[in-house]
Length: 438
Image (cartoon, rainbow, N blue to C red; front, side, top):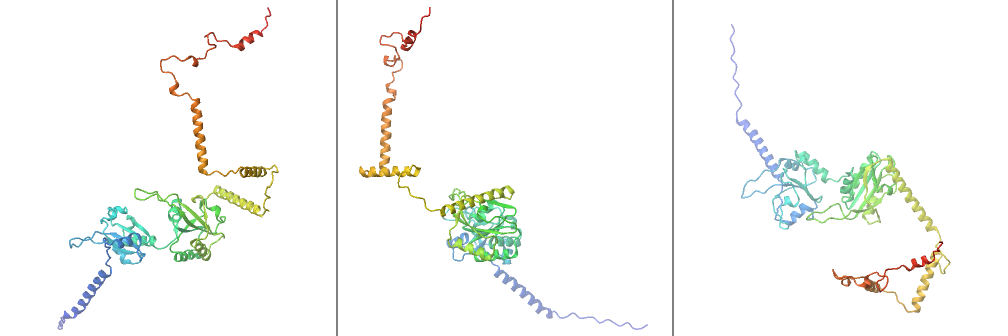
């Protein structure tokens, strides 16, 4: 038998060769988490700084930013405090939402109103985490709980709320809230699916006019009463555009703290030509912002389902307006009517004759036109005289006999002074005229 060769034992590598790479990885990880903690630290608003609070709540400062605020109590007595919501932290770390993320102690009582921030802005403390949006976009508005499940969902909602976009309108309530109640609103009435150039035009308008609210409504299935007659007639596939400018009032009914705004009134500036483009819409919006004369409408538009009956009603209104405009143009083209200088028997001639005679009489007798005060005094005197004359003919309570006393003879209806039987003289005369045939 051959000899079995012995296997060589492999010696392990020295430990010192792994110490340096392991130490490098550990240092890198520590540095990463340290930098992440520094960069992702969310600032806290000092509740004692009134200017900072007004900037966050109403966007009144010079910054003009939108804020995403997490109601988070401030740590006291040197304690660590509650951890920040992971949903809010993840949305902050994403960084794509156009908002400044801040923390705020919403239990703080505002000195002016004596209410906490929760109560002042009607925030539901039971919905956790309590997040609201405020700043340039408007007063605090709480984020619904269904959008606070993940950071991505919160980020998506913040983009929808804060990034400029055209509002989609399908109901009358939405039309009032999202368009008519704004200072200036541009409404696109789509005649079909918008082409790419229309989408690009609206996107450019959003960037050019950040203070103007833009909205759209599908006019293929929806009909706007009290508005369609002022616009070009509806055609399938043709888009229309109109600019609204608020005149007065609002949609707020008021409560114990705020006063009702009154009935909402608005005015319009429609695009007269059919079809839309960036240039035509931009010119129209610019004219509205620069104070071009707009048309006040007597009633606010309402959204209804488009039907043939509504279209026929709108067509009749349009025809009546055309007839009125045509008659007015014909009257303007007529020569001015002859002025009546003498009474020719017509209504205007008789009126002018009366006015002439009245003027001659006043001039001959030096009669001056009476002032409203003199007319009021004359009317008061006339009423007083009428009351005095009426009092003479009325029988007052003091003139009536007392209860139980007999009525005087002058009040009794008697035939003669001697108290004889009442005789109808006419009846006697009738008896004499009767012939006795017997």
